[in-house]
Length: 419
Image (cartoon, rainbow, N blue to C red; front, side, top):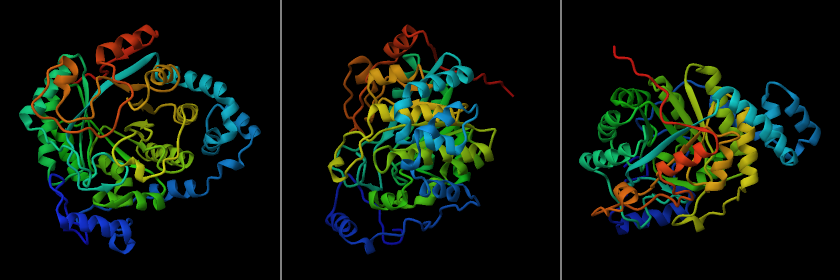
C-alpha cells in the first residue's frame, strides 16, 4: 500500500476494493495529491514541464485571426506563435494550404516513405483507476498475462508476416508485469525484430537503462491530457495519478540511454487544441535540450470501450485532426508522426500522403490472439482488448495499399554493426 492506495487484483474485485472505489469516486479527500511523487519515484531537474504548462495556460486560440494564419504560412520557419495560429479555429479555412505545406515538409525530410510496425500486448492487468480506459483495474474484463513461451509464439507469428518493428505493451501493473518480465520480453523481441519499442508504465532512468540493455530501442508514454485539473479527475488511483512523474518519463528514458522517445495527449479528454499544443511543445523542448534523440508524435483520439460513458469526450472530428497533424508537421518538420489503427482506413491512407510517417498494421489490442487474427486459429485463452480499432488491415494488405498509392513502405532503416 502506498499512501492511501493499494493494489487491486482485477481478477477478483473484493468488497474492500469496491468500497475503496466508492470512496475515491465520491470523496476527493480520499485521493492522493496528483502533484506529489510516490515513494521510489525519481525526481529529475528539468524546467520542461513548467515551460509547456505555462504556454498552454496562456494559449487563447480564439484570439488568432485570419491574418495571423496567413503570416504563419508565409514564414519559412514556424515559430511557437505561428504554430499556435495554425492550431486555432482561424486556420480551418486554410486547411488545403496547410496540407500543401505539410506535404512539402514531409517529402523534404522523409522522402516518399511510410514506416510499418505492429503492437503486441503482453498483459492487460492494471493497478490504475483511469475512468476512460478499458484496462482500468475496476473493469470486469478477461485478464491475461502472456508467459514467455506464449509471447515468443506471438512474436514468431508476427515476424513471419514480414514485420520488422514491434511495439510491446502492457497494462500498468508493477506487480503483474514487473521490470524483469518486461526485460525478458525485450530480449525475446530483439531476436525477431530489428526495432523494439515499449509502451509500459513510466519507470526511473536506471530502469530505462536496464530495458535498453535488454533490447528496447524507444519508449512511448502518453500523457493522456496536459490539463492538470482534468488529469486529476480522470486518474483517480494508482501510480499513473502522479502527473509530473508521467510528464517526465520521456526525459528519464533519454537519460537512461533510449535511442528514441514518443508521446502525445489522448485527444478528446480535454480541450484538444490546448492538448495538441502541449504535446508538440513537449517534444519541441525535449528536442532542443537533447538534439541527438529521435522523436515521434502520435495523435490518438478517444475510442469507444467499456466505461467511456463515465466521461464527456470533446469530439475531435477528422478535419480537426487533419489540421492538428498538418500543424505538427509544419512546426516539427524532423519529427516522426504516427497514426494508429484507431483511425479509419480512408483517413490513414490520406494522411500518410501529407504528414504522417508511420502506421501500424495487423493490429490487435487483445492479449494472445495474433494466431487467430493472422491464421484463423483460435487460441485456448485470450485477454480482452484495450479499445476498439477502426482499421484492421493485415500487414500484407497495408503494405500493398501503401505501395499502390505510390509511396514506399519501409520495414527498417537501421544497420546494426557488430562491435
